[in-house]
Image (cartoon, rainbow, N blue to C red; front, side, top):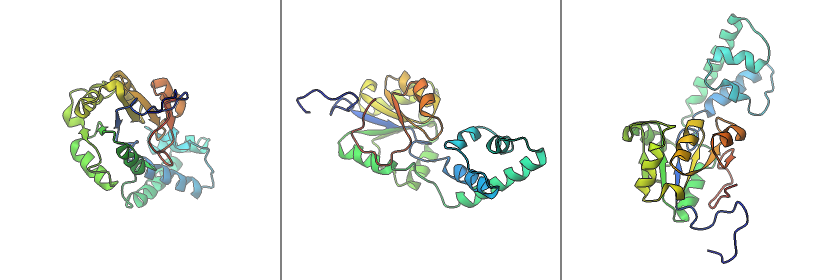
Length: 229
C-alpha cells in the first residue's frame, strides 16, 4: 500500500477484500436482444430514439411500450402489429445466444489477478446460473455462487449478500457489490456492502437513490481497482 494518503474516491489496496456480482443485468446482459429489437423496429418506422429510450419499455407489454417510444397515440390494432414486429426482431436476435455485459469478463479477470475473491449473488436458480455463466464464459471464475436455491428470502432482503460474504470469508463491510436493480442495491446495502450500480436497467440517479455510491454503464474499459465515488 502506498505510504501517502489516497486521493478522494481512490480504492486503497486492501480497503476492499471481496467483490460480489449480481448476474442478470450485471454479468449477463439479459436485455441486450430486447434493446436491439426495439431499435430495429424503430428503424423500420423511421424513428431515431433518444439515449436510454429502452428504459420506458421495462416491465411493460410491448403493445403499451410502442406508443411511448413513438411519442404519439396509436390504435390498438397498430400497437399489436408493431409489437408483433418487435417480437419477430427479438426472436431473430435471440438465436445469436446469451450476451455478456460489455467488459464483464475482462473486469472479473482483473479482479482475480489482483488476488481478490469473487462471488455471485443472484435471484436466479442454480441451474440457470450454471447455464448462463457457461454461455458467457464465466463458469469457474467465482469462489462462491449463492442462488435462489440457497436462501429463504429474496432481494431486497440482504440474505443473499450476507451468505455471499460468509462464503468468501470476508466481512460484508469489506465487500464491494455490483448491482443493476433497485431491490438488489437495497439488498447489498442492507448487508453492509458498498455498491456500484450497473446502468443496464436504471439510471445513475435511480441507482444512487437506492443506495449505490456511483454507477457505470458497463464494465468496458474498466479494470481493478475502481474508484468508489
